[in-house]
Image 1 (cartoon, rainbow, N blue to C red):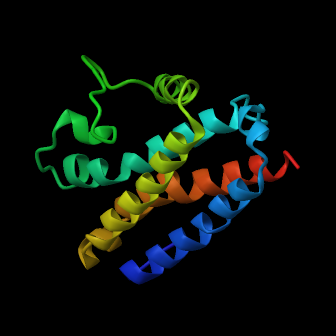
Image 2 (image 1 turned 180 degrees about the horizontal axis):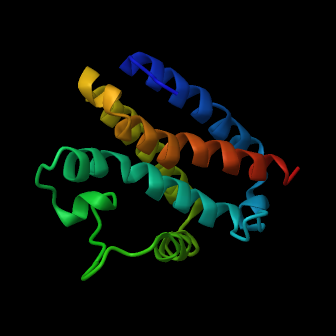
Length: 159
């Protein structure tokens, strides 16, 4: 998919995001501790989705643009404590589930909302050349849009 304008990418992101909080709002509180098809509780899944959206801005800046970035910027301001090789996806996913498990639902939802806003802000920084590059759009699709669509289906299957 070749998106040529920041507005188009934000529109696509918004279309994927909009049903997500609406579906969450319709769930009774006890459902947030239910297991989804992926094996996580809803709260754990939300921590996972938030993390992958949180990675978009640091990937843009640190990996794609080659600008210096602090380790704490990778994880909503917290210290990942990563040493050596960057962890595999499974390690990140397990850490996010563990993060969300003991937290109050309001904290998990606040993190998810902040991650979405951070994603929109990161997309707003893209230049025409970066949109043409393809890596930036792919990161938004993989880190946000695809996660939202996939996990929305899981949330809807709880009903």
